Amino acid sequence: MPLALLALAVGAFGIGTTEFVMMGLLPDVADDLGISIPSAGHLVSAYALGVVIGAPLLAAVTARMSRRTVLIALMVLFVVGNALSAFAPDDHWLLAARLLSGLPHGAFFGVGAVVATGLVAPERRARSVSLMFLGLTVANIVGVPAATLMGQHLGWRATFLGVSAIGLAAIASLALLIPRDHAHAPSGGLRGELAALRSLPVWLALGTTIAGFGALFAAYSYITPMLTDAAGFAETSVTVLLALFGVGSTAGNLLGGRLADRALRGTLFGGLVSLAVVLALFPLLMRNGVTAALAVVLLGAAAFLTGSPLQLMVMEKASAAPSLASSANQAAFNLANAGGAWIGGLVLAAGFGVTSPAVAGAALAVLGLGVAAAAYAVDVRRGEAVRAGGGRLIATHVPEKETAQKGLR
Image (tube, rainbow, N blue to C red; front, side, top):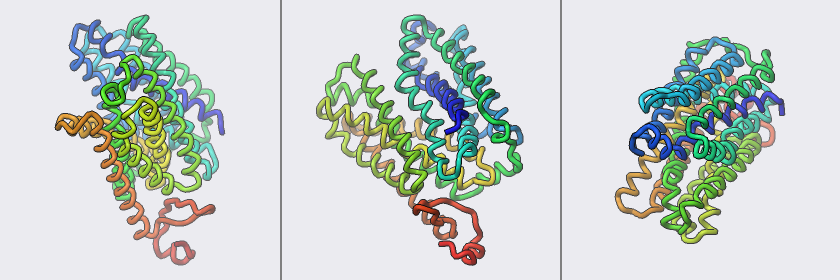
């Protein structure tokens, strides 16, 4: 694999660290700024809002720029946002800084995925995306615990300075390793990118992301009370167990990339089925410590098995202008985060039990499977699902008349 993928992974590592570290620092930030924990929780929402706004917006306004230049500029914005977070004088400034930090998130992964697939042979495209996402999953194993520990011992402001340093390393890596000839400006420009969003298959792929990852976050948002109240773990053990989630998600991400290069839809369907089964079994698995720990690993693996296939599917459906659609998929991921947590909270508040959010997540995974099946049906009807070598299903945009002439099925 090209070294340029390492540069993308470094950027993903920094982004993953800053996204999730705030959860562990909320008590420290609240005490230092003199605000309540619920008020400090708005800092998490501000970052997610920045992702949803920034993903399509920045991808659109940079549509005619070199993708290499766009990636570097996005990381500069990332560094500025985290540096401003470190020096924020009050919670209002910190809220604005966290919003700014979230703006480049989705566009970086979206444009980065397009660049990553352009660096490798067609049969290794999903694997290249999974290697970029590797930085995000490893951040949950190494980056977030280390940054949280730094914040607890040196102050939360030191954490954001450390994340800014990771961003600077990513900028240097991108400038040195991303080849200029593999990151040219797309010919379609803004009009071509916007045209891609008028495609029904693109929206069905985005809907699969929202439902599929909504299933994950319906359960994961309430994983701590499940582990403590249902499985009987002490609160001090939760950090280690969450690292196991990172291990599972890393394994699932790498496996998903390899499998998707062989069978894109098969990997997606298999991942969603696996996710539904794991979540449906959560009430049973949370009855003792060993099976509960296994459930956390399996949850991460099943969910991230679908990450690369979903990203690649969106890009294939918008193959003429993939940057905006690819970035929109990251916005969909964060909508799934918010929506899944909301649905999980509803069933929990309704009194269905501490593991009920996982059952709700299983229902969302089944919904995602249904949307994915609808997307496949649309492809078949349009004559766009064709078989390539090894039986892998790929999306093309060959007109039906031309397809018939070539004998494609």
